[in-house]
Length: 388
Ligand code: ADP
Image 1: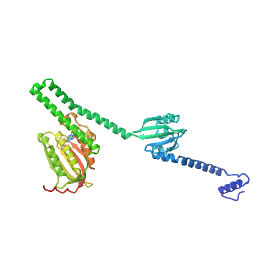
Image 2: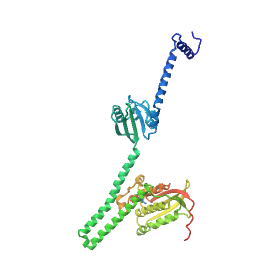
Image 3: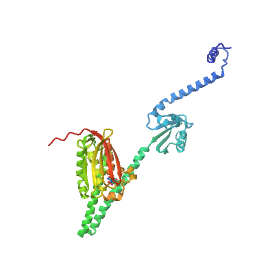
Image 4: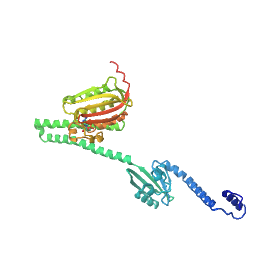
């Protein structure tokens, strides 16, 4: 009988004795199991060490990436692929277990047989491009790239080009039609000729407005509009915007008011803020019936910000339009808006310009009219310009 109470100690002594030429050691069953577990752990560590350079390589990849071994299970992966796996660990799982995507699992199987494949897959609301490539040593490299955002941007751009072309086609067709009618005889009748020339002038003006707005929008979106944030007087800027809109306002007998306390200033880009107020006042004039009023006010709000409000006494906007109001080419009443000379881009430009100045924009509307609220950081009033 062993003198050692501890079975592990006893087993060690017995094994040492056996290896030193003694009789075969009689090991208790628990120790046998322990030895086999230690061996397994050793093998696993060796496998991980062996995969270390590959894991390093996979980690440097921008995509979710993994190596699929001949048994169809992931042998090495990067964090992005692990993030897709249930439990956050992809090693040891099949692609089907990770993505629940039969088409991808099928492509990986075929790649193990030697055929590479590129495919688009949908996981939940996201779109991925998967590349499965057979490697020389009988394994497969799988790369998954999330293309959801770029696909969305592509589709927005396609819609924009289609909308812009459609908007441009209308005045171009009107001009071409009027010119053709003039050439085929209307030119000889002074009354008719005048009405067709007026039609050409009106539509040329519309084309000019559209192309100007499109250019502004593209300059803002491609960040070619240089933003210079500095203290800007709200009252002074609102006054200049009112002057720009005074002619159309006069024609509709719409009163334009500026009620901004002296010395109110915001940190903004002077040109961008003026453009924002011009676009909002221009809409107020366009959509408010004759004899109405539009007012610019400003007051401090929480967070050390100033809220500049352009409010009109027009018909208001039905609430269900609000979520899409700032989209390019979105119009509440397309016929009326075009008739009023709208391009459908005014509010999209406003939203971009406000965001560019670290501000935010909201809208309140009801039967009493519409108020656009622009919030910008408060600033100390700028020094008055020196007298010339
Ligand atoms: P548009 O050039 O057609 O005016 P905007 O982007 O400036 O395009 O405005 C989008 C739509 O929002 C307009 O077509 C109009 O239906 C609605 N809208 C904008 N401002 C007002 C307002 N002050 N009162 C009523 N409706 C407005």
